[in-house]
Image 1 (cartoon, rainbow, N blue to C red):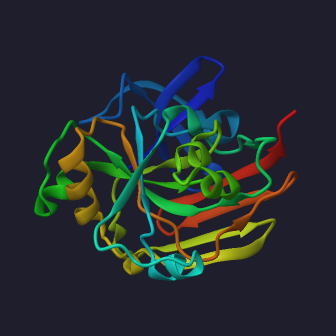
Image 2 (cartoon, rainbow, N blue to C red; image 1 turned 180 degrees about the horizontal axis):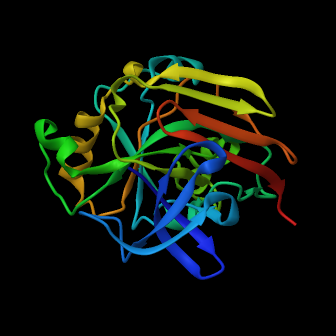
Length: 257
């Protein structure tokens, strides 16, 4: 199932997205998408509504340095254990929303990633049970102000600006995430291209590690890390991130006015 959130003339709703291409429709879900969704009976052509971020997380947990080639391009060493950090939920935006460049930064980078969406409350999840707590997967851009990162010596400000966590276009619930292509394009030029099979710490290990630290709630998002090829975005750019089996997340880039 593909789960999304839309803005329609009737308001904001969770939906199941059905069909392909121009024939896609958005079928309204009653209340929330967790468990077995029930439907209201209302639906719209997807072209007639606006896709929002597919989930509003209580928190976004991100994994740093999780592809060896990216670690190498950043001049570091591959970590023995997952490196985690938090992005505020106010950084989340949906497809088509602008990534706003803060005037205090001159070096804002894209980072294409596969994102995990948690489906139920959980704590201390063993790797062997990790997939039991997953609702599905979506596409993410872990936008990062590199100059802030270097200046501060930690990542909160660099990763936490409003609009610095685009998510979408929807959540795919039926997916094997172990070997998917990830591709990032800026104005149609491929900048990143890798596969999730190259993750240093795989999804079960990530969920085990994170849930040993903190309780995860339905809708929480875990970003799994970015491959090599990160680089700058500038005013007027369009950044598209595609994850095989899910779809493409596209966001324009704009200077703050």
